[in-house]
Amino acid sequence: MAKDFKNSIGRKRLNTLIPDNDYDAQVKVEEKREMLKEKKQTTTTSAPTPPSTVVTTFRINTEKLKTIKAIAFWDRKKIQDVFDEALEMYISAQPQEAVSKAIEEHTKRT
Image 1 (cartoon, one colour):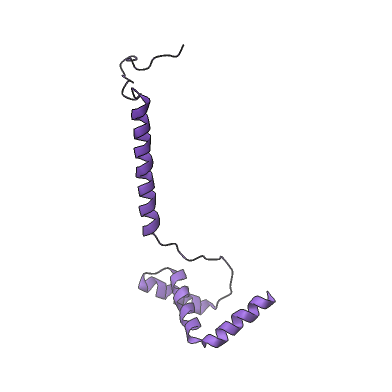
Image 2 (cartoon, rainbow, N blue to C red; image 1 turned 180 degrees about the vertical axis):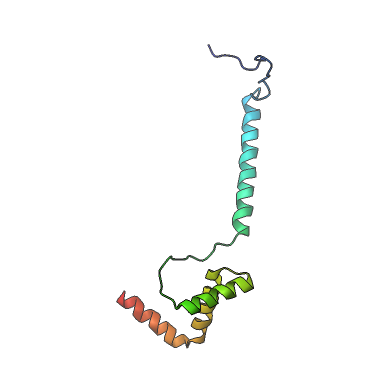
């Protein structure tokens, strides 16, 4: 025989934690699920996904690295953001046909 927790046990009353019928419990569960779905929808639509990144190693001139760090400090940016901006400027300065051809040839050979 199962113990009846709807009556008080000691000084604590547990009857408020156990619903009286299954319908009330099911309605509460459904309401919580709906709230969680709404919360997930609002959080996923508001936050754009960042572009994918890869960790790699490069050798860089010491003076250029000091300059990049100083620029990042002065502009209150991350060093990675300064690198991204610099690379974007370099890539956009190249002729588009040359970049497309270089990407195509590199893709073939790797």
